[in-house]
Image 1 (cartoon, one colour):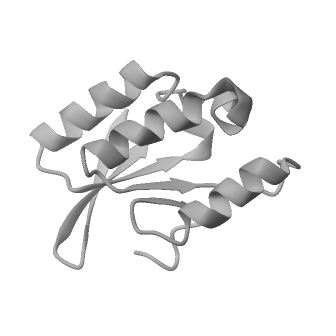
Image 2 (spheres, rainbow, N blue to C red):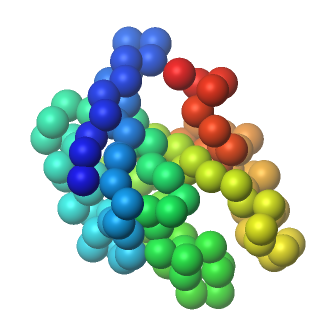
Length: 114
């Protein structure tokens, strides 16, 4: 796993670069949060491919459990990927509502934020 550092509007942003699943559980999220916080990061970018597919099935409650930790510890999270493959109305509504705020955002690519 590589951490690419971006500085956006005086904010130190970590982008996780890997070809492995690194976010599979709440514990994985907490470990990632702790490591990034210790390194002085204020925001995280993670790619959809690095998150367990179960995350995107809201019935599993994995998304809610993980994202609650990011909100609780005030670490904004950007999830990058093509989410059009999911035909779930509840997931699409969840993404839409999340994108209204600044804490959790789902985006197609990084072109508009970096």
